[in-house]
Length: 64
Image (tube, rainbow, N blue to C red; front, side):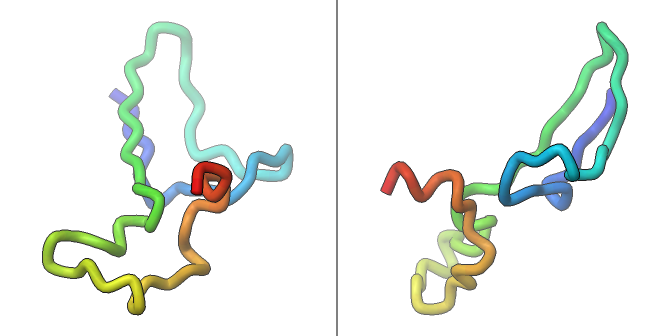
């Protein structure tokens, strides 16, 4: 199985983005993901004042 880490994230789709893996037809791929806040909030930290707003996913701003 090929694992794509959540550390391999982008803020926009672009042809210049670097490949993180190549897969063949039939390969199994596991994608780790970040949430909207890049996992900065959790049950122990729900303080929006401490969120690094430069690390949020701008693609999801359309839903706000």
